[in-house]
Length: 576
Image: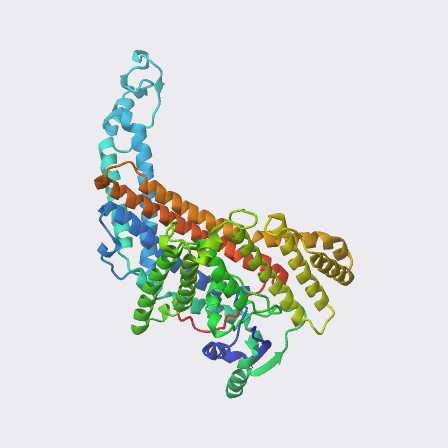
């Protein structure tokens, strides 16, 4: 469900501007569009936050350099941390930048004067002052004498300020100071800086809100959005604080923020929306339930291996343990992990179930499970056509048609009081026909039944009657694009099969090594670890690309979801 919003104009006494914002922030019910503020105070607050972020990055970079200097056995746990402010970290970086510049200058100068050897520039200058030429021949030899005595033309080189030995000594000191700065930065405690982030975010948000709160004479006004369910609480605060409120419904053309409250069993999907940076627009539908259900199915099929699902589950259970430990210690920062851990638990279990149904474990099958009906159906050839994997393609197309028809039938039911529902039901008929056509093209169905032609004809005629203007001319092309949408779901089979084949190839590579058994075990373990690790990483990438696409493109195009909204963010203090 998408929570209904009210537009809010809040009026207060101008002299109590900051106090009003403090109380409004404590209430935590109003969304303010803070992105539009860009004054001097806002810039200063942004600068403070950016400095803290930069300091954390500098510490992480210095840690890597410092650990390399300590040797391969060094770990982050071996670094003794010390309290350090943001200003100190930035000062160390500034000093390091100066030293690096000096190091590069000295290296360039040493490179120029190395061919001369370690000569004394003061003595050389005395010779020059007495009319004796001092230079470097093109053959690289040092020359002292008159120009006529030189066997080759001289290259005039400006004398250095110090001799080569001192340059090298100075370079060594500079390099040592750089290492000292790196060590100091690496030992800085980034946790203390991380702890400042909530306060820095709050300072920035408060300065942005102050700028948005426009003073008009003796009063100040700020505008925002508030969920309808929280209006009564705001009205009570307004009465207590002497504020004026103007509440109204969103005007035509306005785009309020989107606050989604899905059913409890799919509520963790909000973390997935936030992670992907997507939000349905305010006037669109809440697709949390189908998104969660189909994404789970897509995750399982794209990963395709029950053993990988078991690995994900073990890692997730370890995460649950750490999360509970953090909750017991009172760390609020652990709270957002709960939604992600719930999602990964569901996805992992679904992948294990799919692995059991298809008998796929690390790219291989368990022999005594090979005769299970689901295994024979998913992996075997079609009994009539003899085409291998026909059943898997049929399953993918069936998932696709269910996904797209859900979108169209949902739209049609929502529009039952309007003639436009006929278009939605017409598109549902086109989707079903294209499903039959797709299965016929690849040889799964023997042909298209007569009733399907009649259904397509009636559906297309309905769409033609309902279409207006240019839409009539584009109707046939739009109908044919549905065929592409159905075929697009075959990626679930193709990507999952590719993942299984890659795993099987690494297994074969490891097992078929022509080495004695007492030597073979080490490369065997390495090949399996690297191969399956790479395959798991590729499976994760496939989920991000294909599972997200099928939900946010194919399904959303048929449902009419643009993902053009922005999430509701209450003006409140940062907790993590």
